[in-house]
Each structure stands twice: as structure tokens, then as C-alpha cells.
Image (tube, rainbow, N blue to C red; front, side, top):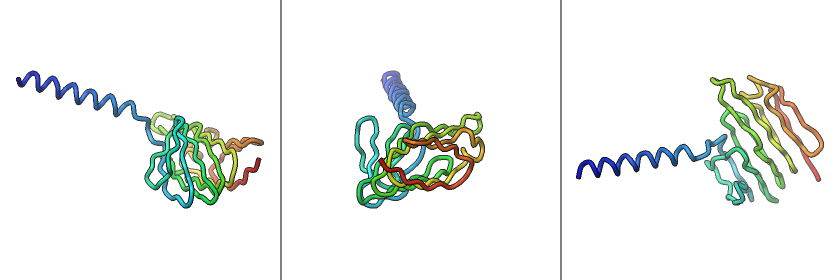
Length: 148
């Protein structure tokens, strides 16, 4: 009986460990939301609310009216104004392994950006792409309005 119980316990622990490894690692968190704000993730629309994890590949969207504030793992802060859309295309922050990189694709709206550690440690590894230009980040602040 004890062997059977031990076997089931071991299977449950290994299964839980496998599930934990399958969960994508959060690249940041939603800090502030006003009005309408959503996150598109793998075809699903999530209502943005403080504490919601932000994942690589997420598309942050705000309605009219709506604002969204996000802080990323490297202390980068993003603020989206009304009618904005930002795709979190790339994000790698593993400084101990020398792996750093960030690409944000701003499709529309008003976006404010305050650089974090990636832009300070590896300025060439951070950039913001818009429909008309690609901006290299060199450890700074940026505010942009993108209209279509």
C-alpha cells in the first residue's frame, strides 16, 4: 500500500513540475489600468487588470478611453494612451548568461517608454519598431504618437 501511495505521489509531483515548466515566464506585470485595456494572447482577449502577467508575444491594446501601465522584468516601464497597440515581440533578460534583448512593435496610439536594464547593459539589444521607423534605444525616455 505504501509503495502504491509513494508511486502516485511521485507521479503527481513530476506532473506538477512538468506543468510548471510548461508555463511561459512572465516578462512583466500590468501595474495600472484605466478605462478599456486588453491583452491579446494566443488568440484570446484578456481584460487587463493590475497584477496580470505580461508574456512575450502579447499584444497590449487600449480602447477609447483607456490607458495601461506595464513594468517589465528589467525595470522598463511602458505607458499606453487611449487607442494604442503594442506587440511585445521579443524580450530576453538573463544578464548572468549575457542574454539581453527587447523588441516592441508599436502599431498605433501614444506610447511612453522609460528604459530599464537591457538598454543600459546592452543598448544595441533594445529597439522599438513603428510602421515608419525603427528606433534604437540608448538608455533614455521616449514618447511617441503613431497614427495610421
